[in-house]
Image (tube, rainbow, N blue to C red; front, side, top):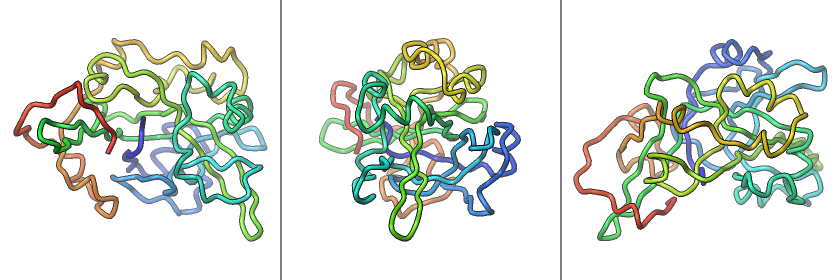
Length: 236
């Protein structure tokens, strides 16, 4: 599961990296502690057919929902069921997106009940792209662009922190994911273990547990004071 992440690159950087037209309207801000329903960048194919860098709220609201009140429960879509789920399947079939991220957080429960947060991030500082799906919800006073991040079974060293991870898309798979076509089984394959080995599993400080905190210090490495017990894993 992915319930907290960081995305700090500017609109100019992201539009260049993803070859997308910036449609954020100067509304994009760096966020080292993204929480459910926060507005964050995503890359999708616009109605005109070009890649667009947009701002969307994290937590998909299906078009048929009566209200967006349940969005915080829709932040993740399981890769195993996204193609058949009533809530997610229409978006998976026609409205896929890339969700830029510096990395994501998970918490491991230690002996004694405390929880150690970790930040999973590329060692070389490159951008990550989570596989996402998006939807538009028309309310009485506004239209919301919302999205979910797909998750899959964690592999390699990542499995020592949590049993799930975001479905990560290497750059060579961005176009296929956004293209709106392709076999579901092939689209939902996670990266190779060799590709995932480029990620660092970094222990970070407890401040990230409070969604009111923000800043680059949240992603800074801290020394571990006691070993983690990988048999006791939790998100928060």
